Image (cartoon, rainbow, N blue to C red):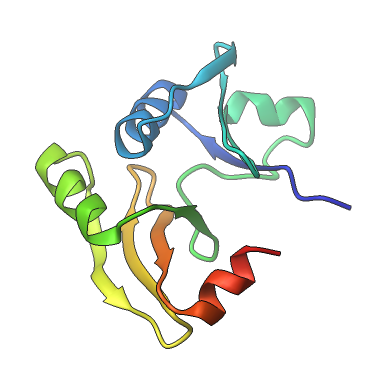
Length: 134
């Protein structure tokens, strides 16, 4: 089995897609008016409108109510990413400024416009780099 995609359900696909374009530098690929994707080398971030849930199970996913998952992006330099994000002024909340974590990653935690947690991180130690090399 292989994890290939994480989907966020939102009430405003265009707003969230624009946010992720700005913070990641990636371009959204629009598959429908209510569905956009950001294809990375190891996983895809999909953004679906609340309307798309009617194709699955209406009400199963509720926009802007996540308080458990963190979307994590590997970046080259967390401190540089922090400087860029603060200069863009698009991040509604910085939860944690760049910090070196006990498991060897440097991490920047912030929220997207829907309140989802986003982590930009970079491995600093050999052990942390080895975990990513699998």
